[in-house]
Image 1 (cartoon, helix red, strand yellow):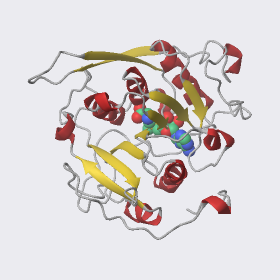
Image 2: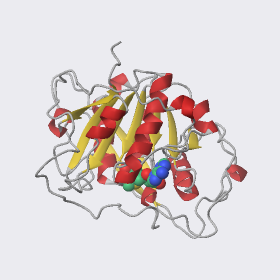
Image 3: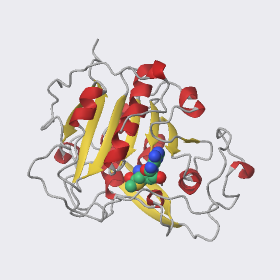
Length: 307
Ligand SMILES: C[S@@+](CC[C@H](N)C(=O)[O-])C[C@H]1O[C@@H](n2cnc3c(N)ncnc32)[C@H](O)[C@@H]1O
């Protein structure tokens, strides 16, 4: 897919090298390219999400730091006709010498709704566990979550001291609303929520400050979106070449690959084994959601970030 909407000035497609320096836990540079792998797990979020009739709100103004009720495209009470049910995740410090028994609880809303962003996906629990494992490095970091939905990883990062901005598609106001509800549920009412549609160079994207970490849980499920996602990431790499994309994806098809796109967009990728951050189990954070789903953890960065 060619990003035809992109202004010419921001689409240099420099030939790049995907050589990855050896990562202490890297086992494959391109885990999405897994010949012989098997599709597995929960039903794939395959079809594109449709905006139900009447919900295609005009572009709202940028979300202020503390949104007033009137700023919500769906009204003060959030999602009319839908009851949000809170789901709790409790992260605990791994046992070992020097452990202090640290714990952190995150509650997120879930709503019975056809849009994928209204649920916690197994990938989100695994990515949140990765953040929990690296919580000491999060303090003061600028973190953007894309395709956040109920935003478990972003909320956890904020509770660990990161400066977090949540985002979901500008065209999916329900998903933006559930981002806001998640902030409220965790007593983070001033967290910024913006509408960012992958691949669109919007005013809100242009206005973002440089980021240190981009979080992306279960966004690589529709191959035709892959390049749009990487385009957004590439744009943020222009603001900070050292930004990293921390992403989890669920293995649903052996045929999907990021390799060529990473090469095209001058990015490199390392695969972090789950055992490296205590996520190689069916229950994480007192949730059975990860179950037996095959989830992979990737860290993607600019191929020349050491220059
Ligand atoms: C499978 S859900 C994952 C939600 C959440 N990250 C999680 O793992 O629990 C995919 C998310 O991507 C968002 N999304 C889908 N298409 C998008 C687009 N074109 N731009 C931005 N976000 C999009 C959806 O609204 C949804 O929140």
